Length: 133
Image (tube, rainbow, N blue to C red; front, side, top):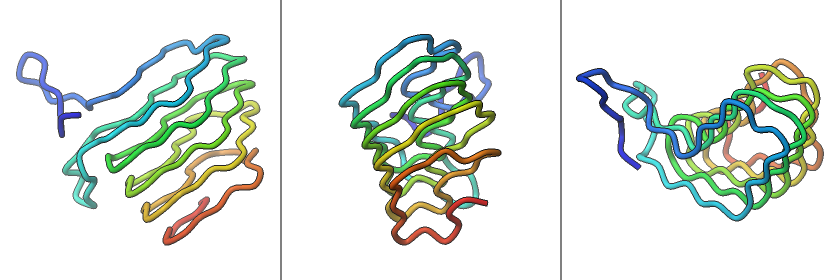
């Protein structure tokens, strides 16, 4: 994935998968390799940008590097076996009405989960200075 995406001389974030409405969708066994993130914001890459929807299932997703691994707004989604390595922010929850998460693995990321409400179960954080603010 490119460090940034350009459209008519305007810089945009590179996004692996963007879904405005994830309604009863399933994402499984996907690996996102993004440019390395740096504290100065040198990369804007996002693995998944899921704005909203319900009834979706995500499993066995792996995100390497980048700015945000998983940018999500949700009601009634489930996620299992997600792994984030060296992302600046692993999971950014922009809003949440019920997101069940199990077996979330975060390695060497700056921020693990940034959200307004928490529904995580059995999550593990290693080498992460800011877990859940």
